[in-house]
Image (cartoon, rainbow, N blue to C red; front, side, top):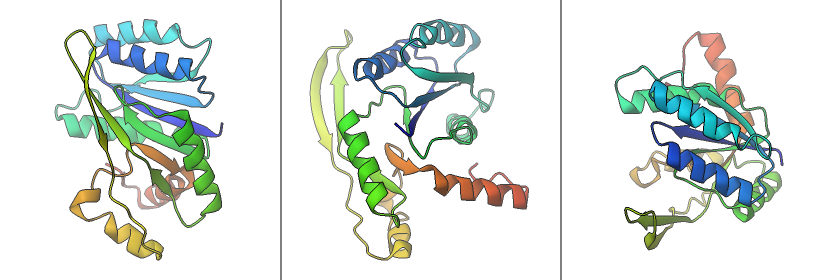
Length: 195
């Protein structure tokens, strides 16, 4: 599969284990990039746990470049942005350690992007799970993202500036070529655009 998953984590070793086990069980055969902003002792726990999956999953695990920043959003943005630069597959998805993408969605999203060259990203329905302290599922809600069916690519882009779209397309499938253009511009301007 010409797809990568970028996972951001910080001090949640159980969740990264659950996440990787999920992709192992679904026989995910793309690449997984983990940017880890955890404290040093938790990073070592994550490293050990991740090693247990490397025989069945292609994983790149590294310390996040924003690890030492004090503000959470700055840390996440910098770490995520820098690891995305390393993704070398045609498609990728971004998520945190408690998010899961289902293989059927991945396959359908990639097929859609292959057939529709003027689209650069696809989102699907999200299922929000609520757990009790024993990690038993208490409740499930479906979260539907708003439609963006504008015919003109510029109109679609402008719609993403509206408040209900601000979090998109974090959990979806994106074309890597979109970011490659940003990185070239960044080098030309000598300015880190994504941060």
